[in-house]
Amino acid sequence: MSDEVKYGLAGVLADDTAISKVVPETNSLTYRGYAVQDLAVNGSFEETAYLIWNGELPTKAQLDEFRAKERSERGIPQDLHDVIRKYNKDAHPMDMIRTSLSFAGQEDKDANVGSGMDEGGFNQQGLYDLAVRMYARIPEMVAAEFRHREGKDPIAPNPDLNWSENFFHMCFGEVPAPEVVKCFDVSMVLYAEHSFNASTFAARVIASTTSDMYSACVGGIGALKGPLHGGANEAVMHMLKEVGSPENAREWMLTALKEKRKIMGFGHRVYRSGDSRVPTMTEYFKKMVEVTGTDEAKKYWEMSRILDDTMVEAKGIYPNLDFPAGPAYYLMGFPIPMFTPLFVMSRITGWTAHVIEQLGNNKLIRPLSAYTGESQREFVPIDKR
Ligand SMILES: CC(=O)SCCNC(=O)CCNC(=O)[C@H](O)C(C)(C)COP(=O)(O)OP(=O)(O)OC[C@H]1O[C@@H](n2cnc3c(N)ncnc32)[C@H](O)[C@@H]1OP(=O)(O)O
Ligand SMILES: O=C([O-])CC(=O)C(=O)O
Image (cartoon, rainbow, N blue to C red; front, side, top):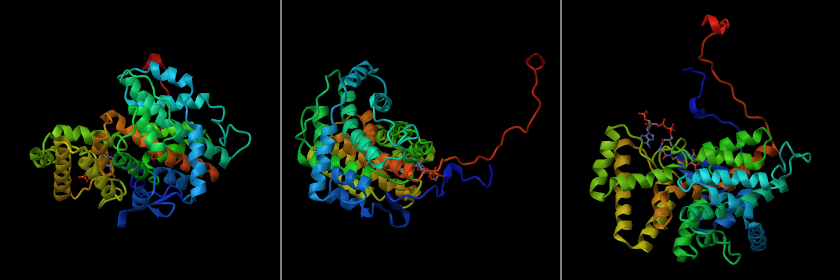
């Protein structure tokens, strides 16, 4: 260990950004200056996506134009459907979406726009167009992969439906009650962007070599898969299932802490006294419990309250966004391994905005390391070893 190293880059300011601001002291998060809670409750994911890329909220006319642009980009190529049909049904959905986005990149004639492989150099409009294409098509990839795992044919997008409604339609062939769509839409707003988190940083590192936007986002998916990052929303649901009942919850938590287990959905590198997004997502998880109205839903709600209270009381560690989002997705009817791909569908907005920001003022990201290996020594020929 070296005193000079900031392990995990904790506390290191790696670059500046104008996209979002996380203030741990006040548990606040703003996208382009707007409080995320406000955007989630009073706005929509479509408006939020526009804001993240364009820096301003859209007027009615701008939003109409943006929605039309997104809808015109829907429709993944038949080649990609053919590839999805070949996926191993037991593969993790994150491996599927990583592969689909990568495949889409090699098919897309515009994939290198704005990268170092493009003679035109930095091209903000071209990169924005690519970002909107990914935002429009990733939900269709996720839905087609879901239906493939279920042994069902894909459902074509419906241009009469908004982004969130269309996703439900492509997964289940119907759009649920408006309260359910709103809860999903809120989760998409809350997951969209979070400064230099691990997956965004991974995407920026890739972009900093002036590689293409698809490569950066495929790298982002790889980083998001891990349970210390996006994969935690799945792990939370597995935990709730393991806990089993509200009666077990307190004891389960205390035992897990005694055994020094990592409790999924708790803790955060930046927030130390609560994640800005949790109160809003918890409110909408509760709404999902009410809409569902089943004993099972109530059980997950009660368990989650007890686990939250017990963790805060015992360790002073607070839940992060994955804690309420996981069970909310479960109550919407999504299978657990699909939760992190839902996160991808939202975070593609943040990743691509960061790729554009990085390429617009690029400096290769290449830190130093403190060497701890052997000092230099003589090569020994193989017959003398
Ligand atoms: C959308 C998102 O990506 S949010 C993050 C989602 N990830 C999770 O929910 C996974 C569970 N949480 C964690 O693993 C961590 O809290 C992380 C990775 C998110 C943050 O990690 P770090 O900033 O490195 O915190 P660090 O691991 O140093 O934690 C500080 C202390 O709190 C403890 N701690 C932190 N989180 C947890 C947890 N979830 N369960 C138990 N103990 C925890 C650590 O063991 C450590 O204790 P110690 O000082 O006695 O060793
Ligand atoms: O910021 C982080 O480290 C993780 C996180 O909450 C996110 O990416 O949304």
